[in-house]
Length: 169
Image (cartoon, rainbow, N blue to C red; front, side, top):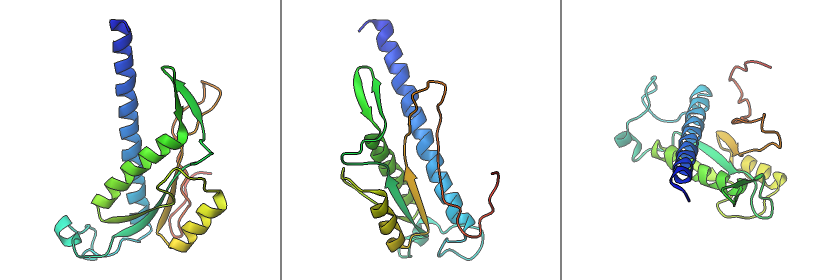
């Protein structure tokens, strides 16, 4: 590679990592926000503050969240080509899910994964698993793609929990 090509590749990788970090942070904040809005936070002093890390050591989790890394197994989801290599959505979904899991667990939020291996899991299985777990929140992570270069961005779908006001249409 030429020096210019190496520099462009480094910029693309840096931008990709920054976008990934922002996505992870946005998902963590969204999960924590929904948990707080639904009043599902357990423990603490009953006030507006969350318990400190030292208070969390021997207490129950503040909330339970199910994270669902989209696709898996024979269903790879969206496929893109980057620098001659194939990038498969299920791999990105799994990596982002693991990052979000680590960050949530640091704040004493229990995380249950619908899958932690690259296996097939249809929508009915995911739904049955999520309902049986009785978690406070279910978040399914996907990195969608579209054939049109004019369509891009991040998409997050979260079920409207009971008691949380809904805005927009």
